[in-house]
Image (cartoon, rainbow, N blue to C red; front, side):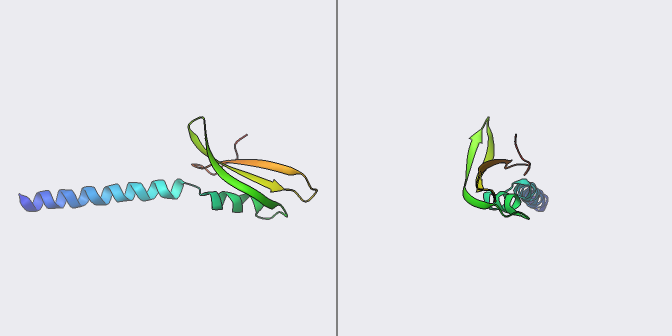
Length: 84
């Protein structure tokens, strides 16, 4: 009986760590979001921060475009998609 309880405990521990890894993989870091914005462009990043908007984490990246304009990009931290 003890061995069965130990086996169940081990299975539960591993199943929780698998779910935690899946959540971590879905999260987009501020660094990853910034790289996503400047990849393939000549934009210069002026600043980046994470804020909570409507209960969701959003990365806000401020860039200087090649034509000298300042533009803000909002990236959903959970999905990595641009927020309008």
